[in-house]
Figure 1 (tube, rainbow, N blue to C red):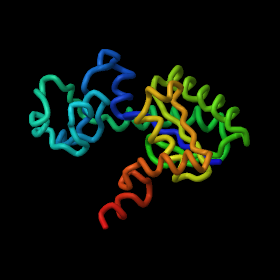
Figure 2 (cartoon, rainbow, N blue to C red; figure 1 turned 135 degrees about the vertical axis):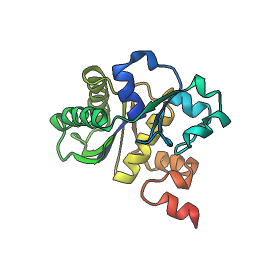
Figure 3 (cartoon, rainbow, N blue to C red; figure 1 turned 90 degrees about the vertical axis):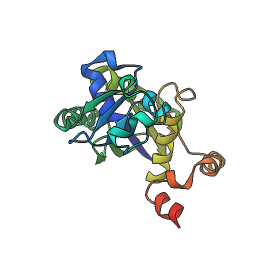
Figure 4 (spheres, rainbow, N blue to C red; figure 1 turned 45 degrees about the horizontal axis):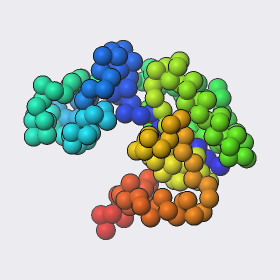
Length: 194
């Protein structure tokens, strides 16, 4: 089976590591020239602020003074990413870093429950040692692991430990039927545009 570790709202989470007062507040991280939104906290998403929104248009969604707007600090984000990936790489085999906030790996066990317990511990270890919240999804393929991680991030009330798995065919079918095609990694945007 394949798994994906995905850092939640990564740039915002990095900023919160160094400034805990940002917790539970709407926060956006802006591109290098502070031109547009490149990361959002869940609170900013709830206000309807879209990814890529020009900074001057935030006022269309809310009073901009209510939203913490931060300039991107990519060196800091890269450093925290290395720390997260180091922890994951120390615990698993075949780590394939996909982006600054995501990596695929092979599950260490054949048993679903043992994998779930292992990954829940990994989520807690990353949070404790780096301060970054992560979600992990695992499934028979990378695409389904990506979908599972997406479910873990989007439905935290159902996934208390940050781990979601898609193994049973009927569960895979149910989740894929409810998923917007544009959200399917690797193929969704092209198919949705057609």
